[in-house]
Length: 404
Image (cartoon, rainbow, N blue to C red; front, side, top):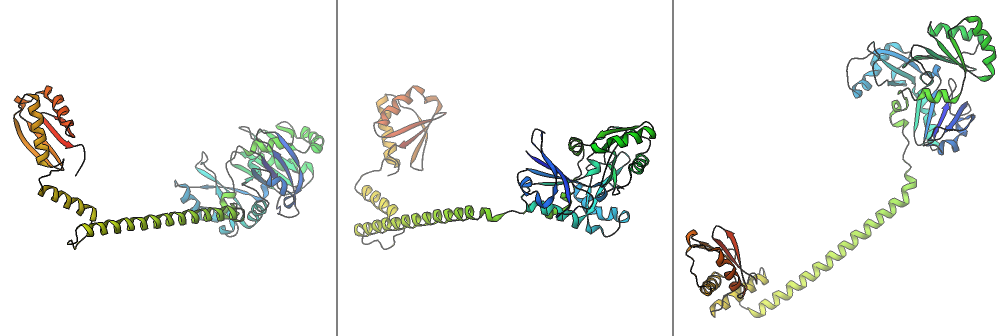
């Protein structure tokens, strides 16, 4: 995952302001770096999975406000009222983002930036193909050791961090001695690490030697800013809402969507055509059956189900001529009686029950002989009748030929 870090000077815009940048590979290796205007970074932006803006400390104010216990959604809605007395202007014109956790003293850090300005920067990057954009306060992107402070001085001003969610920035460019005194005064008496451009290290070493111990100088490097940025969770882009999200480029999906719709239409048309064909076939079969039924039974005037009525009439005709269906009570009972006689033993029947084309026979327990089951099943199988043992002397006879 490639990340493009862009460090903006104070009050940077999306057009001609030069900003320092570096591209970092997924393994952490630093790639292309330099300075350029945001509008000229299109290739780098499009080639990166994420763009991280380090907003100048002077452009982001960190407020510390007392926050009552509430959910994240309620806190977001309450932020304008909580910070109203601490900012100049209308809170609706600002981006407000609170830290994820309270400070030990019960306060919550709230980052404040001008909405219109930040929105213009983010939209410029999204327009160049950025997939994801984050905007972090630069004062919270300095490496910080417990019990100490960190600061950076360059041509655009001063950046100071003196706590996990504490820091500030001054957009002033003065002589080194004045800048050093300002930083020392703002940091207090704690040890201070001062990050400087390589060209200014020599001059500041002489000034630090005169100022006394407690200040450590280090050459400013992108590795410091990148490491420090991973220690903060305050990202101002979510505070922009929908304005900070990449708009979906529906143009690139135009043809895939058209093809999907076309495939759906073709499949629906095919299903409808097949259904109509099968419906016509079913109607033709029904008409043929109805005609056959009318030809066989011309006196029948009401024809609701020709197949069922045909079966009923055939069964009635067979019965009138002394023929029985294999699933009728008389046939099953007679077959059972004949099969019993072949076994040479006579079980005492307790009850006979005929339902759903099956005959259920219950034998009295004292006459139930398990050894009779196999010969009975064999004898009945020759008559196309199945005998199932339900246990407890209950036998069930059904025709193997199904309903007739």
